[in-house]
Length: 151
Image (tube, one colour):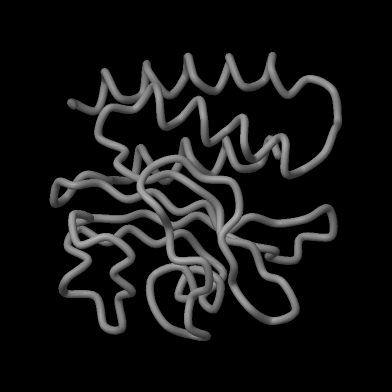
């Protein structure tokens, strides 16, 4: 998908989510809605979901796609890298990422976006995988950060 088309699609998704998430509500419900919309609107998203910090562990939250790893080993993989570095991470080829956790061998690229609470503490990440290599770019990062901020 070219950048212009991708940006237009994200703009429509963002506007749709603004309407759907208008009232403050349960964070898990809001995450589930975000995941549902993204997974159905972005054709190159293979797995879309949240991993949440729970008593120092990273556990799966709302997601859509194949069965996920329930618990991610501490300080390993792309999700923990996003948390530990406190920034979004784009991985063009997950097989080259040191310590990558392969929940599904069909995933080849990934983006992780930190999820923050009202006091700006990281409480988890939005994790998106693609079957294709090099699926994610700065447009994905920018828009997914905006979308995560709606939660």
